[in-house]
Image: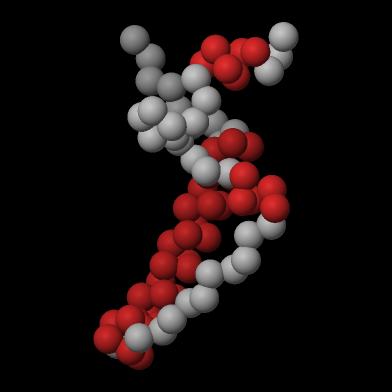
Length: 78
């Protein structure tokens, strides 16, 4: 059996770039917490942005007994 070596594909390069970017941002966030302290950052209040009409329609996964049944969804395509 032969071992397959990483070939440096475009997908692998993209994943590597994303991981490096996340690690970079994580370092800055950690430095910010170290400088200001977690207690000070916890005091910051972030206001929620107003949702657009389309965003108001998005409700995510439905709770049991709420939302449309699969047959109702299928009927939309008939």
